[in-house]
Length: 370
Image 1 (cartoon, rainbow, N blue to C red):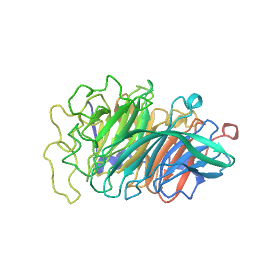
Image 2: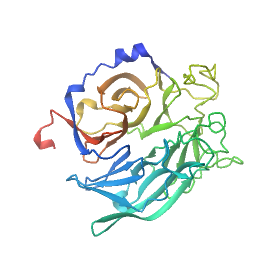
Image 3: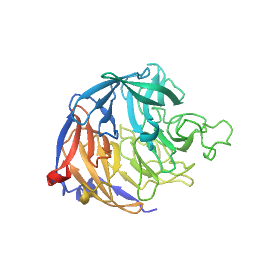
Image 4: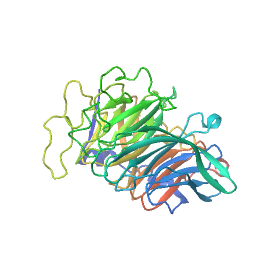
């Protein structure tokens, strides 16, 4: 597989802000502290999670309403209310899927639930709540929960859970949760062809393992494969195509080092462990991503957008099949880019820590296209 190393030198060379002057941010909600997840309802209203533990409904006129009925959420450090995604057939079944950290402040982990929106008067709440997956809650620091959600074209539900800060315990052990990407049927049952259903002691929902902390995941509309990126330590952030039963190597192989600068492994490759499509040195701290297919942004056709927490920018990745052709800075000086969503209205939405949620508005768009 062809791989691209984005080093401190080559990254700058590939990152000229060619499109930076072509977009502006239109405020949607500027009160949300950490807008972790965004999705759009058929009436163009948005559902937005705040990692601080609140779910908001923002209608097409900008009115924001808090949605009640959430489960108990452990809001601590990187934990809280995380992703929100609609079922692909939401218009027919009404299911909303949510990830969050559950358990106690001493022992927590990622959980996946689904529910339906219920409107009573002017109040919105979650009803028919179902817990689909509750990962074992290990006693560890409140870090590396993952957790993005994506559906594939067959209707399977994928979600990520980070290694929970237990680097040397969880990612390579399929009998333990964490450091994995999981696959379920949309009702929470385990597909009969999951890779470890016949493995004694394994967590049968696991689809791939050896991950550190995947905080971006999306279906590639061109190939129908699930793509995910994940945080490395100091250097070694990765972009991967997620394949059934595959070991992605963390922490046995890595292109990063400890935050102190010391080494925890001498290996960058090993038989039986997958190599990333690309990796970043230094780390960009990737969060969220979206494949652009909207006709509102013809200049971004066949582009993958990735947010950078560390460098406060939005990166446009040009694809050549499963390879990376180039990367550019699409927008800079944004703040910590936390979430991205392409709405059914064709617009791109971006969530920025400490700033809120915005529509990415093409400045050259004609009045008839809005």
